Amino acid sequence: MEINIDRLNGIPIYIQIKEQIKEMVARGFLAGGDRLPPERVLADKLNVSRNRVSTAYKELENENLIFSRQGKGTFINGISGSIQNKKKSRKDKLLEIIDLALEETMELGFSLDDFLSISYIKVKERRENLQKYKVALVECSQEQISFLLDKIEFKKQISRIPVLTTEMWDKPSRVRKIFEKVEIIITTSFHLEEVSDFMGGREEKIINLSLEPRLETIVELARIKTGAGVGLVCNSPGFAREVRESLDNIDLLNNFKLEIMSGEKMTNREFLNKNDILLTSPHKYKEVKMFAGKDKKIIKFEFTPDQGSINMLKTALMNLKAV
Image (cartoon, rainbow, N blue to C red; front, side, top):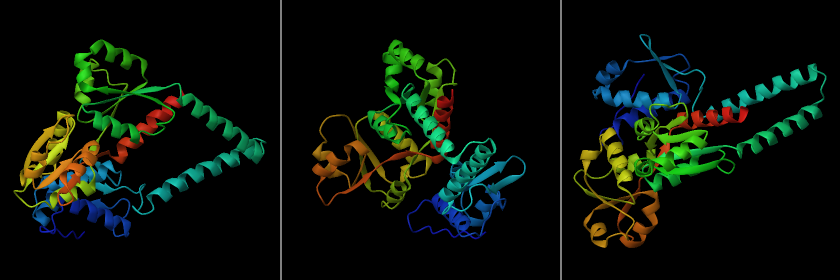
């Protein structure tokens, strides 16, 4: 397995490793069941820290492209197939289920029209049942809540209640009433422990969404000149903390001088002018762009749930519908 690391292109090393492994799977150079080198072996071969390889493997595992077996190693997931036809494979699996259902329908003496009518009724019932359920979404900033609410599957049918983490301690009685009446409590890995503590360690209702910065955001940040002044503009200290933690996790926090301005007030022109590059939350982007001028480099910092978390949430919602 040949991986080439370019230390001058500005792209974090772990992303280069991850993307090249994905490319090898897509091109068929790696197939289901193939064993990947141990983290330490690959790190030594590439002359990089083991942490870089470990992070790349972890993200590939979150995307269901690889899996690990303790004591045996890390392998390409044969179920996932190539990256390019991943959606096609899921569709093929669905078609197989439908074909099987059609065969059993006819064996039971029903017609194809019967199958179509009954299926329509069941889908309609499931949609109507969705309206009976409520979910709470817990985050530390209104920005992240708004963003994640837009990502939730069945968002038009299910009633969604936003809860700020500060409300758990400022208004505990109100939040407990909300948590009692919802079927699922959705939060992120940043706040899972906090929500679990508030719930007294009861996690049966909690769905944890793992968040990660969008790849495009990481690439733009990695290309910032070392030592440059970067100003982060956002609405809440919570969002700023999540950005700092994410930058630290991908070893970019020390590449530049990060200064933060958070709050609901109008963006400060002096702050915008003294920083070489501006980093903004999604909800501050338009305001910053308007005040900063055309020549200022502006990067929108966006978090997105990983696919494994989205699939887990979909499964949980489907299980609710089946109850």
